[in-house]
Image (tube, rainbow, N blue to C red):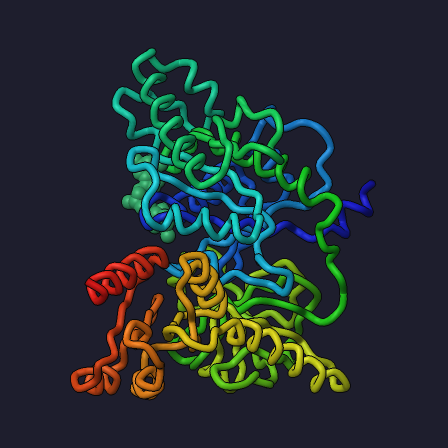
Length: 451
Ligand code: GDP
Ligand code: MG
């Protein structure tokens, strides 16, 4: 019924994949096409996210979409920079309800593609693969914004073969990682098989099909367990901590439940302890400005989930990306501080008695890397969010066992004071933005030491 539709929260869809494979272009294309179709007013820009209502999706899909749909639309999150999906956590696990994994069909799987799939697997997040850049296949003749199958059927046989071959390469790679998959039009049961949708973010081909599959996934997986939008206190996850010219420190946050208002007291995960502060401003992107590069924002008094928002408040310089944000009422501040402390602690206590030290950029990535290390039989004695500082090296020097005297840094920098100190220390550091490469490098070094 109509009331049910109104109460369902917009599912959060994370767009992920290797750098340059076309994540941003895909979202730009969806926005751009909607503008051309005079649906501009319908698409809402958020900080770090784009909200596409069902009516717009229907108009983009044309006659591909039929049947009753109860979700109000989709909120797409473009994963910032090389910050992995790991940042996107919520209390229950993954922040995203669904994911689109973008893969350049001409390049196939790359390190960040594999990383993304491992994380999706860990969180059991349903996903669809967008095999992007089909327009770059030799001989491809585009049909702008059309459904994939329509375009595909018009191609000469050698082009069809090229698409099929490359699709099966992706199927093979997915199989190696434990997923059964096929081209989406050959998938009957999306709960058992991952659908691969060939698309072009340049010509718009396949985007109707992709949206249709996403809506189908959302219906199948979420109809029953999608959290309702409540009018209770807001709950969110910090995507990024950013210093903005003229504003100071702000946090880009995805609000996934409840309501948030200017003047609300919020508790946020901080470097040493939870930050308790009052919201000074809630900022949304000003219309017609590029998301992420804009320097001017519109102020709003109040927001309801699901939404992306930039929050301005005192004391945010110590906020940690990937950590929780909770709105607290006067009588609940203490309890919520305890809750947030608990969540921060959870990421730290998973450490072994002996082992190595790990530093990562966000709580989520720290958790992911510890899991991966465990799977590889590597023990972790110390783990923390933040850059590699002198004090970390000093602490690492207390680690027993010569093979443990290392710091693995994921998406972090080695600070100058640490670099100086490292010159005279026997501690070895490894830095990488790809978890499994970091582990590989460490294992290689371990082997060299043993030989
Ligand atoms: P991201 O790093 O995953 O966000 O990738 P971008 O969206 O920034 O795209 C990287 C580059 O690939 C840009 O130069 C895009 O113009 C280009 N690109 C993205 N999608 C397509 C596509 O479907 N076809 C072609 N030919 N180029 C594309
Ligand atoms: Mg991008």
